[in-house]
Length: 189
Image (cartoon, rainbow, N blue to C red):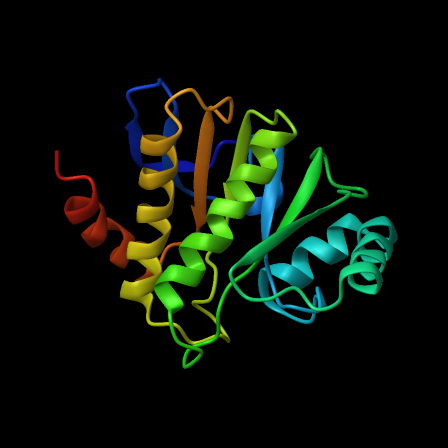
């Protein structure tokens, strides 16, 4: 199910960025991004929904990643198996908490690492949810601007990217409203 397409942009290399209203578990992509915390603990929000649907394989893989690497710093991303989900993998992007400093930079960096991880694996499509906007309390306007800038900068710097489609998957509400406002500023051509 493709959800409802709200906004869409095609870049010079032919790649597409789409903002869709959908449940991330039903996104028509090869991998999804999880809004993670540094310990890859899936206690609430989208992380809990993804973990519950993915089952024990994803949880075990996340525990192994943490045992090998330790806490994942904000602004970074790692890949786990998708378990029972219909995706090739789940990329866990660790966004910042408000007050850490450099929140915009860290959101962009976490998403950039997620895009790079998908590209390295030759995945052609990825969907990411809101990152840092919930319990991490980063203001919605800053989140919206960061999400859009991350995609724009990625495709501008990688015109030959094999990651052909990036989707921002949201629900109706204030964050989507901010994304619509910021879209006009970030993509003013």
